[in-house]
View 1: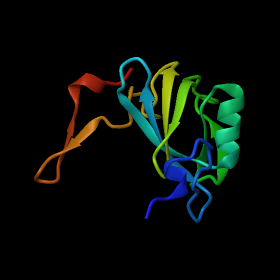
View 2: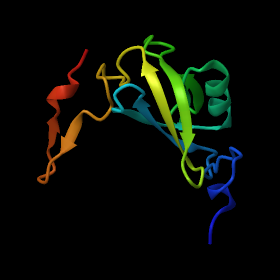
View 3: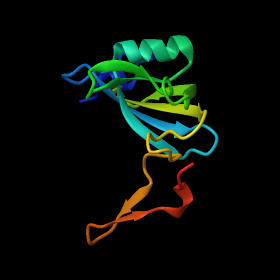
Length: 126
């Protein structure tokens, strides 16, 4: 059965039980995956109003604007929603590293078949 959200032209996010949707963040210029976070209704609204990416911190239970302490903000160029509106894609212009470790992307390690992690050379710190 098709969900009405699949063909709607109205933004109607399907929040989970915690009131969140997953937000996938990619560099608008390079399409490199930078990070994955969560957004609630307030984070979505603030992002739309300011053009700066806002998220919900599940660990701190609070709203936060990416870059509010580091200066490495994310200017949103486009926000997309998936077919059933339970995930968002944010295309952004990063003002510096997206990862709190100082790396360009939070996805800087590959999982090997033996369970070890390999650090990727193309995503060094700084």
